[in-house]
Image 1: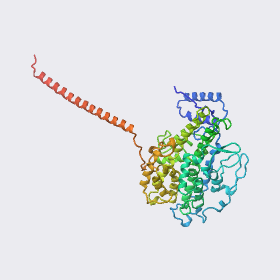
Image 2: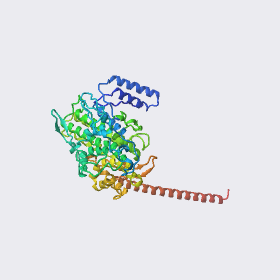
Image 3: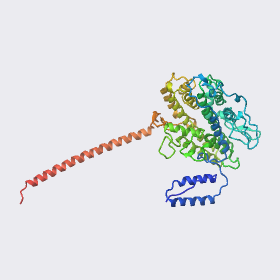
Image 4: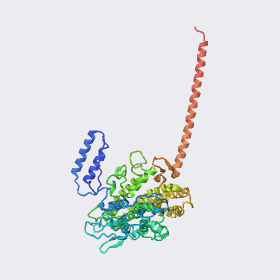
Length: 551
């Protein structure tokens, strides 16, 4: 008999929509009408015996402990920014004839309307965003926001997330007092800030400056890189990818750090009585900013385990599922196709997200002085895993731009965007490998180091990427092998070394195999010899009988 269970979080009851989704997804597993009827009856009894008191919308399968629906809508800003960008013009890298480096092939580097600042002046609850023309441009939306609303302001990627990421602090009280680990001292954010500072960029506003320079076709402050010379397609790729990789990604990390700060500070019972309090709420915000509202409630995203098949997804969650199709790492679903569906990276990241939330809730009832150490370790693991699709993107566009024919402004721009996300972490392991990548992506020098040299050097950093307990969690298997759309292998990735214990086990297996093989061979030889001996004896006996005269 099949056992039926309806799993419910200990700190939250299922909402009707989530309950309904759970029911219908589970019914698909039953082929027998009687079993289906039994399941429906049992589920309805549970539902009416356990009425809903408070629920929060799931985020691609993640069960939040607080309301982060409005935070989750930051992806709609990315959607609207991308929709407002010019169509690709097919330009070649560094070819600016016919205005191919200008905005939408006009005579301007960027529209003059951007010089009028967008201002959202409403502070009522709910806030009504300003609908004037300057607030509807892609630059205005990036800088001042549009869709993700706070109680008294509009949340934004540029002026909110990217401005001074290194200056972010957890704050409490009135007046607000800073406490805990700052963003600048978070190991991941510190790695990014320090790297870009070493390249001449501002340690706190590098992400803001890169994207603003791409929007305006200008030189990045502190750098010699000039977006006005590389091509509009290049600029477009850096804008639409960089706002996620270089602006939102660091803020996702910060929200996890903020959650840990709140945990250590004891803010585990605030936030309208939610288990885990402000700490869980900050952790949920990290999940929301990683995923986005367009992914919906189901595990796997907006189309369940088939992932974002309609391409209407926009944040890091989408990226992991998109890149897995190129590297054969879509192995978290049950369709047997490693090039389609739910990515291994997202499955692992979401398991860690849920684990971190659970650890914070458990800290509420703990008296241990180190009760918040577990979510700290989980943050280290989950953030390290988030590097996987960035590395995959680097490998894909290293390959695509290895020859002159592949160096369109678009494809080199994609290399720039992915490399900019991964470079700080590669540099932390091997500065020489990072220099090889920087030469190609930022200096646009494709001759000093070969594609093969650069690829091999980056692959050698995998075992040490990340920080803390995350180090050692990225493997060659996680990255996979690059395939085309067929899919046919076009660039083999690396292979993980066999651990010493496994080598010993393999050696023992081989030795045993050889031994038993020899014994089997000896047995076969003996059997053949015995059969021949028996036949020879039988023939001799028959000959003797024929020679004896009958009586």
